[in-house]
Amino acid sequence: MTATRRSSAMPQQYDALVDTYARAVDAVSLYRDHVEIPSFLHALGPVRGRNVLDVGCGDGFYTRLVRRRGAARAVGVDVSEGMIGAARAREARRPTGAEYHVHDAATLPVLGSFDVVLATHLLHYAADRETLGAMGERMYANVAPGGRLLAFVGNPDCDEAAAAAAGFRLERPARPREGDAFTVSVLTTPPTVLRVHHWPREALVRVLRSAGFTDITWEPMVSSPPAAENDGARVRRCLDDPVNLLLSAHRR
Image 1 (cartoon, one colour):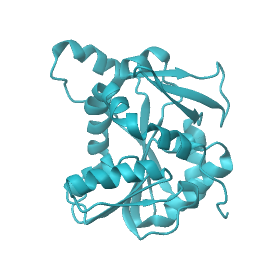
Image 2 (image 1 turned 60 degrees about the vertical axis):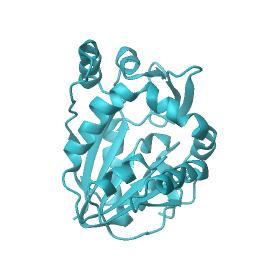
Image 3 (image 1 turned 90 degrees about the vertical axis):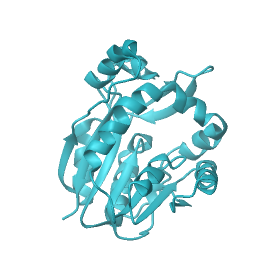
Image 4 (image 1 turned 30 degrees about the vertical axis):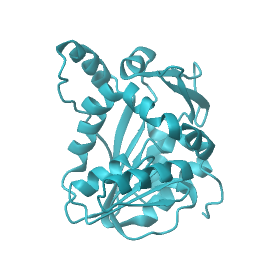
């Protein structure tokens, strides 16, 4: 299939978010620092000497992280020119050797043969099955034989209380169907509102399998203890019903 669609309204959403992105990250820092990042590192494993492509890299946090952990090449791409500008500015201030380019995930060219392709908080921006499939196909085209995809995706079953513990508010339809749009708000002041789409686990697996991926599994979510003892219950709530899930898939 030839990818012709834009991935969604993501460029406008994230271009507008550039100036307040740090505040949004701070608002979810407990979840990010003690559930998301530990889960990511646990699933990622060693990357020293490997080539890594970070699709939907935002401000380049994970691109820089894998580079600092020894990746031979770390490339971040994002459809938002504003976010790529922010990533390049961070790289200029504290160079790691990461590189950044503006590309839409649904029309991504082959940038190389990568041992690991990352997609953190990306697939839920696909507005329809065609766009979701295009994202899967373009990521598969960039994975080296024997390589893998590691993707954080929205948890379609996360309840409102668990999302709030992580610093988010979900406004989903009562009985969402595949591709239904809804909003996720980061609980900043005022809230940072993003428009995303509902993709059940089985739909994501079908699409990635259709793109060519095999050995598709759901990685365990893990946590690290927070410094403040009274934050422990909140971290456990976030871990029991995480706002994101971690999916791994391979190219033979």
